[in-house]
Length: 482
Image (cartoon, rainbow, N blue to C red; front, side, top):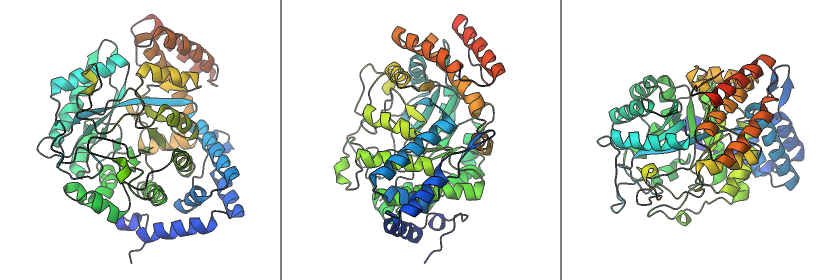
C-alpha cells in the first residue's frame, strides 16, 4: 500500500487512491453530521481583519463532507459562503479571455477528445504564423487582451519551437488600439527545460487539465500516446514550477469518472502545490464532457446534473478560496450565470474551439474540439455581465507588474489585491467601451464605471483612476495600471 504524502513529488503519493477512498467513506458517514458540518462551514467563512479578510480554506476531507451533504439548508449556506468569499477576494470583477487553437494535430488516443490520432475524418490543421496573426487581429478587433493558446500533442507538428514562435508572434501584434497582453498556455505535459523556455517567453499561466485523477480510468481513457503516462502527466505542475512558472492552472474533465473522486483529487492536488511550493494553483477550471466530432458524452456514465455542478463550484471556492476559477463557453448562459455567483472569477467570451475559427464569418465545425454552448458575441457577454452587476475586466496588470505566484497569493490573502484590481478593471473596461463596444453596451458601461469609481476607498487611487479613465476616453493613450 502506498502511503499518502502531500509533500511527496510522486503522483501516487500526493494523489493517493487509498486516501481518496477513505475520504469518500468519511464524507458519506458524516454527510448528516450537523455539528461537524457547522464546524466546517464556520472554518470556511471569511474572517474580517484590519486589512480586509482572510480565509482558512478547507482540507480535501472537510470539503468532501460538504459536497456529500444533501441537507438543502446546508447547501444554501454553502452557496452563501461561496458568494461571500468570491466578493471578499475578487469583488464583482470577472476577467475575460478567449482560447486560441493553434493546431489539432495530436499523437494521443484520448477517448473523449476528437483530436485523437485515430479520428481519420476530422479536418487537421496547423496555423502558420501569418494565420496566427490574422486570428489575433480578429480577437483584438473584438476587444480581447488575454488568450489561452491550445495545441494538440505532436512532437513533429507542434514542437516547443512552434509554440514559442507563436507566442512571440502573438505578443508582437499591435493592431489599432489592440494588443494581447497575456498569453496563457494549455499544452501537453513537458520537460523542466521546456517550461523554462515558456517562462522566458513571457507566458502567464501554464494550464494543464488532469482529465481524471482515477489512475485506472486515466490509463483506459488514454490507451495510446505519451499522455498514457499517468505519473508524468500528474507531476507536470511540479516540473513547471521547477522551471520557474509560478502561476499554474489545474482542472479535471468532469463526467469521465465519479465526481466525488475527482473533487477530492483536485483539492488534494491544490494542497500538494501549497505544501511543496508554498503557493496553490493560480486557477482551477471546471469543464464538463461535451459533444464533439465522433465523441458522444452519453458514452461516459458519470455525467453531472447542473445542480450538482453548481455545488462542486461552490465547494471548490470554499476549499481553495484564493484561486481564480474558470468556466468556459462549454456551458450555457444559464449555467454560467449561477456559477458566477458561486465563485467563478474568469470566463471566456465569443470562443471558437476550431483551428482558424476566428477569421471565419460562420462558426466552423469541422475542426472543433467541443461544441460551444454559449455562442454570444463578446459584446453581448460584456453587456450581460454588466446588467448582472459584474465588472468585465480585461486587466493583465498583476502578471505584467510581477505580481505572480506567491506574490499574488500574499496580496490576495491579506486583501490588498482589491486596492489595485478594482481600478484596473474599470480602466480596462473603459478601453473596451471606447474602442470596441456597441452604443448600448457603451452607455451601460459608462454608467457602471461612474458607480463603481465611488467604491474605491483610497481617495488618491480613485482620483488617479478617474484621470486615467478620462485620458482613455479623450485620447489614444491606453494601458494604465496600478
